[in-house]
Amino acid sequence: MPERSLRNCHVLIAEDEFMVAESLRHELEDVGAIVVGPCATLEQTLAEIASEGERIDGAVLDVNLAEHAVYPAADMLAERGIPFVFTTGYDASNLPPRFANVLRCEKPISMSRVARAVGEAMFAKLPPGGKGAAGSPPP
Image (cartoon, rainbow, N blue to C red; front, side, top):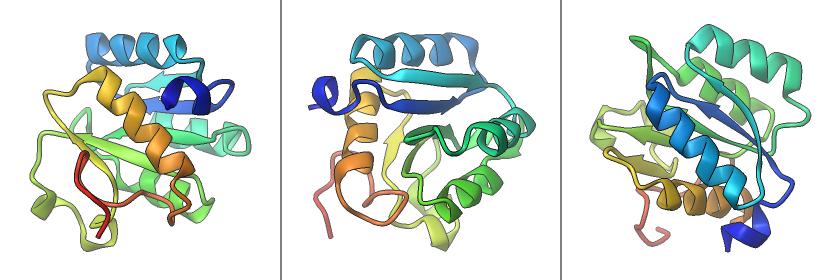
């Protein structure tokens, strides 16, 4: 599915671990996505959304970017109707309630699973953010 659905889609990556960001970038490019970023800080992520927001089709957001919660960026994406998924080592109960339905990929992450999750979030016809934990059925 992601090979077809992510082709030529602009996907923002917000990830502060260089090797994870590079692996994710390669995986998304391999399935045809056009990567925006990667952004390693919240400030970079917010600036990228502000300047490229109309071109961004979806996003992968690490919950913790250089010791800052990524939630302001998630709010900005949601306000613009841009679907996103979280990557996190945190349990779902640690996420703010407004993100309870956001698709999550728990760390350590599978790059191919994240690519599938982005496609699911972008094309599921759901409100921005997705539907729950990666791999779980819709509610």
